[in-house]
Image (cartoon, rainbow, N blue to C red; front, side, top):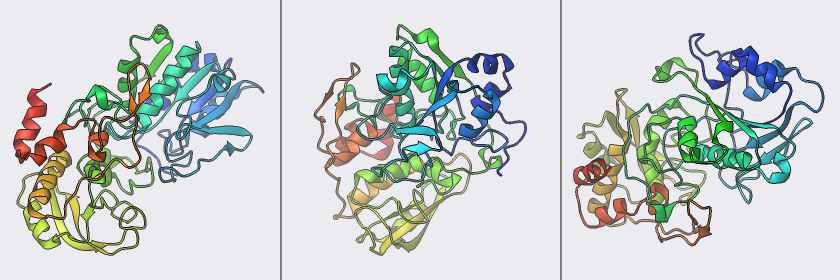
Amino acid sequence: MNNFPKSYSSGIDRLLANKGLIRYLRTLRIGLLTNTASLTNKGEPVFKALPKALKSPSKKGLNLLFAPEHGFHANLEPGEKVDDHFGDIPIYSLYGNSKKPTPDQLSELDVLVIDLKDVGVRCYTYAVTAAISAEAALEEGKDVVICDRENPLGTKTNGPPLDPLLRSFISYFDVPFVHGKTLGALVKTSLEKHPNFKKLKIIPADQNINQTILPWIAPSPSFISAASVQLYPGLVLFEGTNLSEGRGTPLSFSAVGAPWLRAHETESVINGWSTGIIASALTICPKMGQYKDKTLPAVQLKKIRNNCDSFVLGIKLLSWLKNSHREFKWLHNKDKTSHLRSDNYIGKSMTNYKIDCLIGNRSLREMLDKGISPEDILNSWKFGR
C-alpha cells in the first residue's frame, strides 16, 4: 500500500477526520464521483475509505458511483467503454453521451461527494466533469461536497484566456490555460452565482507541497510518471499537430516525434533554451494515434530543475518546428468539438483546428502562422489579462 506523508492532508482526509460531518453523512444517501487514483493519506482508495468511515445501515451510505473520463479504474483511453458496476454499487460513466448525473440518478441521492485529481491545465476534463456534475446536483437541490486536492503545477499561470466562442468540454473555465487553481476553486468560481450555491462545500487540501515526497498514482493512463504531469502543459499542445506527444509509449507526454522530425537538430535547439528542460534524440513507436505502430525519430524531454516551464517550451518548440520543418501541420478538428455557451447551449464549433479547441483560443495558431515570436505571443497573453 502506498503511504502518503503523515503530515499531508487532502480534502478527503479532513472529511474523514471531521466526526461531526461523518455523523451527518451517515444519515444521507451518498453518490461519489471519483476513480481509483484518489487515495487517502493512508493510501486507501476513497471509494473504500468513505463507506468504511460511514458504517451506515442499508439504503444509506454509498449508493452510487460516478466515473470521469478514463473510467473508474483510471486505465481507459478516451472513448473506451467505462465500467458499469462495482460489486453491488452501480457505476455511471460521466464521459460519453451523458457528461453529468441525470435527475433520475440524483433522485437516489441526498449528497454528491466529489474527489478527483486534477493536473492544473484547462483542457484536462476532470474539473469540468466535477463542475457540471455539481451544478446538476445543485439544480436538484442536493448537497455537494468537494474534497479538494493540491494542484501539482502550483499557483503559477500561463497561456491565453478562454475565448467564449470556443467554450467546450475541453475548454470550459474562464481561466488561463495553465490556471494555477485547485479543482475545488475552479468549481466554486464557476458556480458562485448559482441560487443553491450555499449547498456547495469545499474541503481544502494542503497546497504548495513538495510533489516528490508523494507516491505517484496516475490520474489517467497517459501520465506514467509525476514528471509527465510537469511536462504536460507544453506537450499536450502537440495533440493539435501532426506530431506525436508520446502517447501510447513509455514516454507519454515526455517525448515529441514524427516521421519527418530532424531529431538531433531538435535536441540541439531545445538544449539551447533556458526552460529547465533538456532533450535527447531517440526513437519511439506509439501504440495508438496517428502514427500507430510506426517507429519515429523523436526527442525525449526531461526537467532538470523544479521550476521548469514546459508551457514556454511548448510554444517555442511549436514556433521552431513550424519555421524549420515544412512538413509541420495543424490538425483539423475532425471530431467536431462542439461549442458550449455559458447557458449550456451546444452548437457547431467556431474553428476548424484542433489546436484552437484544445487551448480554447485561436490566437496561438494565428500568431504562429503570422510569424510572431514566442516571446511576443507569451507577452500578449500576460499583458492582455
